[in-house]
Image (cartoon, rainbow, N blue to C red; front, top):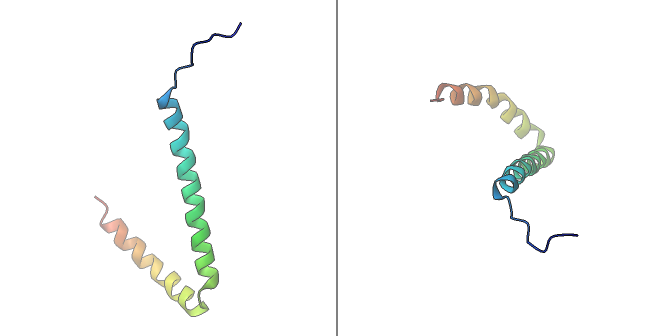
Length: 65
């Protein structure tokens, strides 16, 4: 026979499941937004951004604590 007591909610397990799923969804949404922005941009703008990326990456790596 099933028990009439309520099952306790394991908040840690719920959090451990919800946070990674939320991060994956956020990453997919950000990727989609970037792809749409690149597709809608003018070709010259995209080329200029892609040429600037190595300098941006180098700057971010230098500032790494």
